[in-house]
Length: 468
Image 1 (spheres, one colour):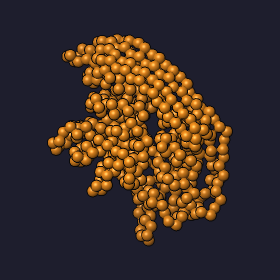
Image 2 (cartoon, rainbow, N blue to C red):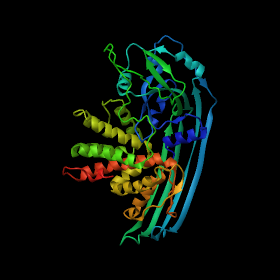
Image 3 (cartoon, rainbow, N blue to C red):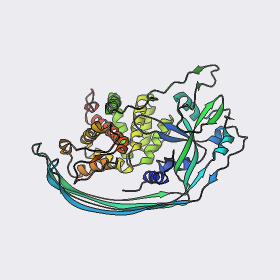
């Protein structure tokens, strides 16, 4: 499969097998994960936490007169991957239908990347402990105090040592016919071919992976906790400077769950239904403006990521392109609900791969979202609670509306989640690692379907998309 920057970073982390090691998710932000950089952790169940660089180094917010810790540089490591695959075949699918499908797939890809680890030894971190903060607090800290956000500092970074150009190519063919005996005149048929070439340039100095430690600010001093999974908050007490003696007790922000996350699909479904219901209550004009701007951005992960950062940091300033239109809508009448909903959607989209983002755009164009959402739901609902790999059967009545290219696009979305999707095998296998991307795909499909229905229907009232 194609090697996007995001995928390469995940691959490097997997090969390093380091504890508490995180991959960088956006090439546009890869220069902002060096040592001492401060990260804001964005959290929204059920998506993964997202580490967002705030644009400040820890050294910038501490008192200026103190020794700067020395960093340790390890020898350069080279990571390579090369491979090609060609697969052809035809298979009956009598287990779910009657008919035949022939498919072909060819793919060649590879990369070679040199990475060097630079870290701050624990003994050097002691130099930074309990240092006083600068007198004038940066705006991001004020925002994080009010929102009770946790902040971290990068202590170890894996840095690319030379400019690297990566590329791959793939060809996919799908043709055939599937007849569904249980459904009168229902069939999946057609032929489809897709050829893709991908390349990515990774500059010297880009960070592909990092480690972090939590910061705690109290009494105008900074402490660095030894473990990044500590439950202690960055701001144990919300303190509003300028209001002497005005304190608030530590309060968990709305939407944050400190207890174990519920392992129940119904909880996920209820939450997404509530979010899309709020979206449906907004004016159709606002929904259309956001959707028409968001759609061309689906093929540009970096732009989506940049927009997510601006919303997370509550920075609704200037942005070029369609993202600027969304920010304009948010500035009108202080659209806080809309901002929260867009941020929720962006967090879900960031869990998906570049290929899935592209396939989502095609799904919108071909009006596949509703059928795909129901298919994803049929997989998630019975398997959500299982921590082991088990086979499951795709429901034929949900496959029937997906024909030709639509079937290939849908299979692509599912396989990119980590499910082993094979046309010759009607019983894929559930994988626990697919749970997070499948949940994000379900949420993304639900939001995009609501946007589509708002665009298609002008009459007021609740949207059918709310019943998910």
